[in-house]
Image (tube, rainbow, N blue to C red; front, side):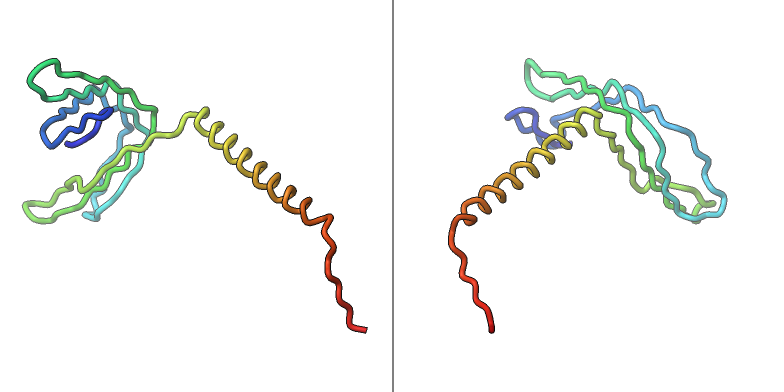
Length: 135
């Protein structure tokens, strides 16, 4: 695992991640021998990251918001058949405050753009316009 914490970069083998608990729903493997993917509510808590260094190694404890765990399984018929995990990822749901900040920013950007358009229209309103008619 590689990463960057603050201005310090860590290479492969410099970080160790220990999740203390993964809470997810249950599921049943299908009996049809087909690959499948499932998504279920989940949460991860008590993640501890250890850095490998000669002395004064910092440790970081992280908490995540609840989210969704997506797992994909592939079926291999050899050796009596069986399912093997082929991929998986965890995504969190944004906090309501984050969505509120995003909405506020979009409203402010739209208001500013409208204000600029009105100001440009106001500058050209007093100028004479060339009108031609075909009569």
